Structure formats: C-alpha cells, structure tokens
Image (cartoon, rainbow, N blue to C red; front, side, top):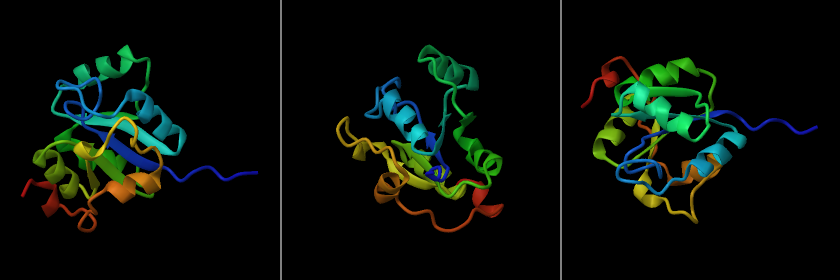
Length: 143
C-alpha cells in the first residue's frame, strides 16, 4: 500500500503565468492538473475578478480548490492549515511581495518552460525563492 503524496498549496497567477493568461504564460493547464495528481491543492490568486477566474477554470473543465485575489493569499493559507508547503507562481514583483507577506515561497514564472514545467513538490521548491518565515499579522500588509 502506498502512502498518498503530502498535500501542498500551489497558487497560480494567471496573466503571464498560465497559458490562458493575457499575456499567455509558460505554465499549461495540463501541468496544473499533473501537479494536483502529485499532491498539490491548486487554484488561482490573481488581479482578475473571482468570476473571471472561475470562468477561466470552467472553460477548461477544471474545478480548482480555490480562487482568490492576490491580496487574499493569507486567507488561502488559512483555508489549508495542514499543507506541508505553500507556493505561489507569478511573474511580477507584486506577486512576489504578496506571496512573501502570506508566508508562501515564490516561483517566478519566467523560470518555467513547456519542457521544464514542474509538477511535484520537490521540483517546485527547487525553483522557489524561500519564504522569509511564518506569516504574521504585520506581514499581511504589502511592504
């Protein structure tokens, strides 16, 4: 009997990160699904409205585990308190700041490619800039 993979949160920006973004990013929706199969709790945290995010996922017949605004990354973290890691993938310094404020490791989507899209926790963490410690109420505000 094999043990299930540990669950980790994989938060995805849309524009500049996912192939469905404007501009399109390097991460395919198929890669997001493979990450889910490997233990990821997947969803999007974007500047887009929650409705726009849900429409994007629905158009690919995927039910995400969460959709949120970037400013709500801390809420996403609190929704999944038992996850072994928290990773946000994005393409801007704004993504990086919100990820760090919520205690997420950050992966710059510019590091990804069709061939090298990571789907397991170890690969994501190898690309990630480590978070600087657990989130605090003070860190919830943008620096």
